[in-house]
Image 1 (cartoon, helix red, strand yellow):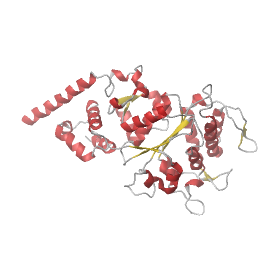
Image 2 (cartoon, rainbow, N blue to C red; image 1 turned 180 degrees about the vertical axis):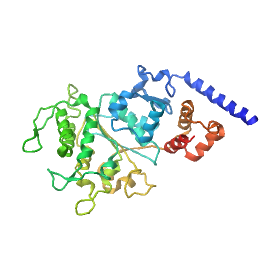
Image 3 (cartoon, one colour; image 1 turned 180 degrees about the horizontal axis):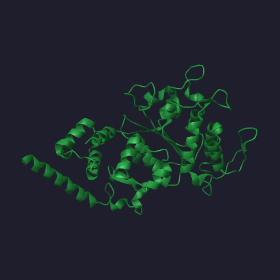
Image 4 (cartoon, helix red, strand yellow; image 1 turned 135 degrees about the vertical axis):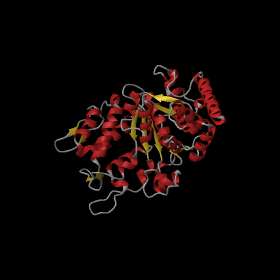
Length: 388
């Protein structure tokens, strides 16, 4: 009986905390401050005082900005809670602060998010991308570069470069997603392109026609990706801000895949190198800082990395010597486990959404057990709470 009284008192304690948070200017969850008309929705206003709090990604933005989908576990959470809430974390705030202060008349700065497995690198990158999207940037997003170097269903010799290999299925799908995200930017092509003896894209045609060429003609889709990326490098920024001028955000999750090993084999059964893949070759060009008017946002990923130890997480370990040399100089942004404030906010969010059903998980002892078992790792915590 005394134990039940203790549990009830603890529950009332959290209810009181929730009521106090509800009175704050900004809180978590589906409160009135997250209404679409609220000015706080813009990431321009996010600062250190908002650390650990949640903001809601509008459903329309998720469909436009992430047509390929967000991390699978987060997508399940969106479906379960019927909302996409993202925690405001220091690494994302740091990255956004750099973007606000950068000089875009100069070559792009390269930012690399790194950290242990499950610390939230992809979500921090997504937060920064959402900021760029709301500020009117053009987005080039490779959501998982590792998918391009393994388990490829169709690998064909390139028609334009005999030494390379095309991945028409991946290229066509990427072009479809690119068109959904950046439909408003698909204006004019600066250069002319010849695809076959009968097919060509003339100078001055809408960039959308170039994208449609790759979507409808799968055979040339890999080359079209290269042409689109080349056009974006030429058109990004501009000497003066005006019609057609835009800032370009190039985001690659799983950056280390560009210089790692592949699991793809050629016809002679030898392993295919990353630089032999047309898609990887073209994305590598985007990592160079020989253009202006944008930023290069990347995240390292050990999860899908091939032939790397599980303990590796530093840029020098995952990128290897070649990748590290190609990316230097870059701005490293460390992503670590939750601090106490972030853990408490996540725990209260799960409580508020009735995600923690087990009675013990709602007690102080249960919370301490979650801290011990997860070590405040965001991914492990989410998986543990899914069973409670």
